[in-house]
Length: 402
Ligand SMILES: Cc1cc2nc3c(=O)[nH]c(=O)nc-3n(C[C@H](O)[C@H](O)[C@H](O)COP(=O)(O)OP(=O)(O)OC[C@H]3O[C@@H](n4cnc5c(N)ncnc54)[C@H](O)[C@@H]3O)c2cc1C
Image 1 (cartoon, rainbow, N blue to C red):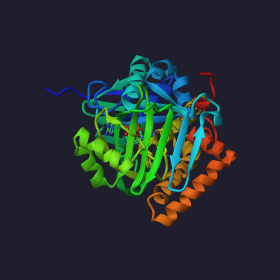
Image 2 (cartoon, rainbow, N blue to C red):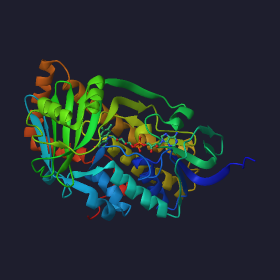
Image 3 (tube, rainbow, N blue to C red):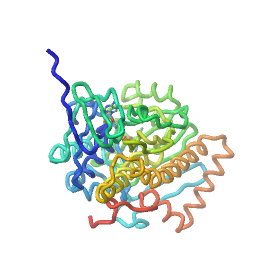
Image 4 (cartoon, rainbow, N blue to C red):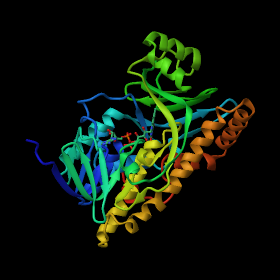
């Protein structure tokens, strides 16, 4: 006999339990909003992990602090004290003194972040977590949104799609996702460094794309090597020794003596932004709403800023007695977030194109970066922008003491 599906009723259903979905669940729950989150994957530690590590800008780190997670995260987080990016003719560097916190932000491995967020969400009485629950249908009616995930049915006043670049929720809501694919992929892995990194995040622009070496705890680093997709695939298939030799050949003395210290994963690169981030009984956050080039490590930062803005929009709508799933209550969210996302996406697009363009364009771009790097005001602006501090600051990102 087949049992009838279990129906979970809640205020907000979250599709996807990546870093954005879990942070949103915690942000809403702490405002007393009842949440059900369904994620296709196994809980952290029970399934495969990927090698990504994230630069979390100090403005976005405040969200984790506000949610009471800083103590759990800090042992796994490396403070980033300086960022250096170099083109052929020049570069830009900014240091922690140019922002309002002791560091520009932190580098943290995705697996450590997922474990801390998942543990906190599991303990929160306002959150019901469903793992291994792939959503295969999303429907909208005048009064509710419904998600079907295997034997689970979730009925909510609002569904938030945090289900990544291939979002089912976005598809079901018929929100266009516009942009293009780069003829490039990013290879990510962990390196054990031969020299101390001293908290410096470094990036160089090679002819086929940027390469970044980002500091991790224990004098390790996250390597992000952008290449043509076929070459990145071939690099991933080499044994560790061959890979280290290719790295030394391509990057010269950028990472001298570095040894492979983790698995390699390859990610196709895209630029896509949704036409709107909200609709009737639906909102999108994180990669479901926008995917950008990982250069400058801003993708998740944008997603965390979505979370902070959306928590304010939903909580305020609830507070004044509006229907939290009504398009009229949610429109403020797209207005708040889309311009920032579009500006960041355009900046990343400009850098990615300029530094893989023919030589004269690369030289001009290098010269422009060198010029900006020499102007203290411009450096400060870059530091604050990279820190996620420009524009209207939502409650979760308001400055708090470390
Ligand atoms: C190489 C690389 C390096 C990067 N480095 C940085 C960085 O330093 N800093 C930074 O800010 N950003 C960085 N990014 C970007 C960052 O990885 C993404 O922006 C971030 O992962 C988005 O998080 P998310 O939760 O929105 O989506 P995802 O991480 O894609 O999570 C989506 C979740 O949805 C679930 N899901 C999908 N479909 C379904 C379904 N049908 N039903 C249920 N669940 C579903 C998945 O299981 C997953 O848990 C990097 C990206 C790459 C490729």
